[in-house]
Image: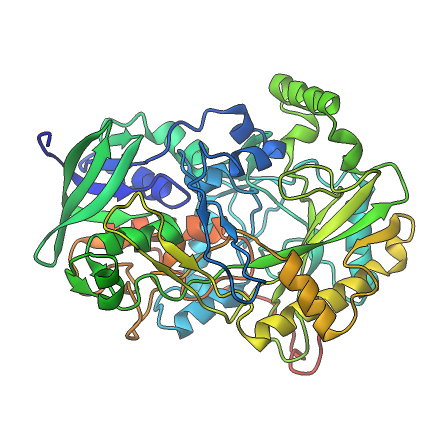
Length: 554
């Protein structure tokens, strides 16, 4: 064991949350911050180029490679759960989609015991992180470190066709789904900075790492939290095969994500007694909710052949990919500068649903999840998912050894409500895609075929076809009930000098991608630590259909 080093703060994980927390805390030159990351450098063409997003996501070098247990309601399929293992964490391997979630999602958090986490309190922190290049309003930020752009701004006519189809089906067009009104069809935004992925490493650490009071250690495998009685005192980790302890004078902050943070708590002796005993771990502190309340989004693709030769399918050959790559490397222009998800929609599944629970990502190409062509010829697809699941799963350590992956079970589609949500996805999407705006483009339907009609047929298709949207959350939730893990200031219940700041603390999963909410959480969490939380003076208005009880669209 090497000699211990001491810092004011030790932050575990340099991902969507940890990079921000470390950068913001290190703004105070009078405190020292250690940021620990198991992965290596994010300086890779495949990470930086937005259109290459499928490569780092499927790479063992950058991805922890977690996998669920056989999912009982998905034909016992094991589901991939990619988590970033690199500087920037999952923000360096994700799809770069910038979605805050619905404003009412955060009011829902507060109703679940997350005092102070309503939309009005969260909004200043969304604005603080944003450098929005497409929208300028009272709802957006334009001076923050995270660039938000529109990619190639819907140059392909298929994007506009999808939006127009939604309007023809009776939905509204929204100019900014992150602003006053999420509900409707419109342009999608992404974390891309002048053609380069705007991960939290790129946006925050690129400048922060120059500070003498911030130490960043890569290839550092955090093994457990050190405690003295009920007080966190530091972190034990493995670096180059050697065990080392780093002491924290003020706080240890876990930012290891919805899988990593509960596992690290459990292997450190914090969690449900039965789970720890089964894994051969001595309990230090009873917290039954650690690893519980696991949530995620599911989605599947509606795929069509395209009547016109305008889809991305013609750009996926090796030669075309090389040309795209060269253009991006030289000029940061062309098809390489976008994630290709440039239009989208958020709708309600039925009357009686208060705010949107279905999300669409439109792609002007027909591809598989690994980025390969789905079929010969031109095509397009729309990703659709029911985004307010009621099913709950768990993360459980199976060994005191952090290197052994935990047991992950999502219990996807365990409830009838969730299954009905996906039936609604099928029926509503078919109606939208039948609209005249798509007539010039819509060819043969590839999936789901017209033969998939009854509830039983739709359920069977969904069980076989649905994939994770890679948005795990909730396993160390904020709250006041017996299953809460952290309080409203993100401090672990019953322990001192220990916080969790990542998507694991979400009480419920928002209606949208999770990178933006996680970054917001980190910005506000850093201010909670510093005691400088912004309190809004005047509330802003947000949309709510006044006839939501009796109307499905409007």
